[in-house]
Length: 132
Image 1 (spheres, rainbow, N blue to C red):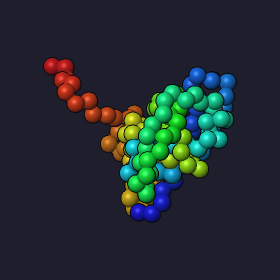
Image 2 (cartoon, rainbow, N blue to C red):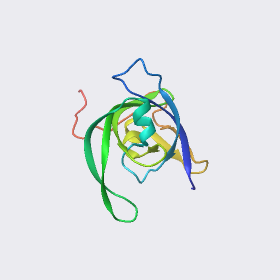
Image 3 (spheres, one colour):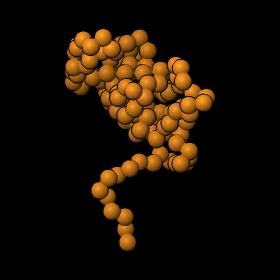
């Protein structure tokens, strides 16, 4: 499938006076979280909420800052999340993709809203019973 990138908007909901950042993100469906570089943290005045121990590709472990809150938007879909401060570019992982109900089209390498839920994000709520 190759390298997939997509456009995202990132904003700090605690600082509405700051303009959202329009970024190109590397899409990695094998990664779990949203990762942002240090310059995004400074531009959006994101606060460190915690630290996380991560395992990187070579198997080594290290501590990174976990910042937020962060509003991530793709088109008309949004989610609120935290992000790990890591790398030189924004990385979009599976958790925010699932939250916004986004999928990757393998033939074109595009990120798109789930065709099964084209108008609003869908989700599965296990154990919730429907109304009779």
